[in-house]
Image (tube, rainbow, N blue to C red; front, side, top):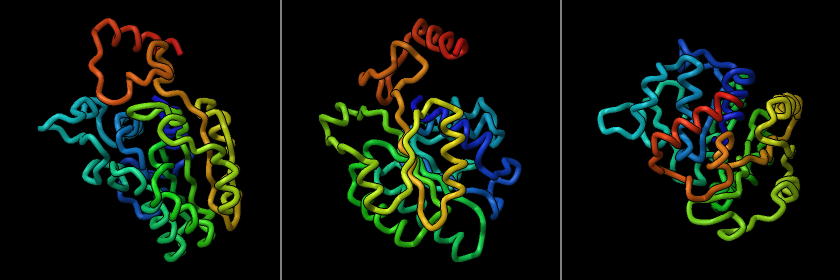
Length: 239
């Protein structure tokens, strides 16, 4: 829920893609590093036309195609993910490939709080500016809750923006649920030269459903009652 607005802007406004030709060589690339958020990812792909919305309902079913983490067998998915800390490195590889081949496609990666605590992520943070990857945009879904506790309890990362500026990233901080702000930040990113862009998106876990917002207990696979399902859909439709 915390990345739904970001995905909507990426897939319906920003990225150059063709759902009828998922492997189009000139397409923009996307990596969902926080792979456990794939229900939002699959929903965005379905809404954009890569497959039917009904297929999303096969999520994590043994005979279904929607795996519990992104898999490249799924139309529109550019990278497998699930092990936190790997996504930014994968995205760097894609961005480097575009530079090497003289292509204009751009690469976007969404990172979660767990990603930001992984050593491999910080090695990648050092590499991207060194390679002047201005075709790379990293978006940090800063919803401040992890599987077992708040980020401050697990590993307080303090002022991420200052750290990334010191690594020579172009840093933009936004409200990750403000569509206008998301669009503006991506437009700015496209104008930056010789630097990758890091968008720090302040978000809310469970955004749009009052009894879920900011509640750690809703992280992961939680069974909903029929009443909770009905109430949450009603709230989302009104919003």
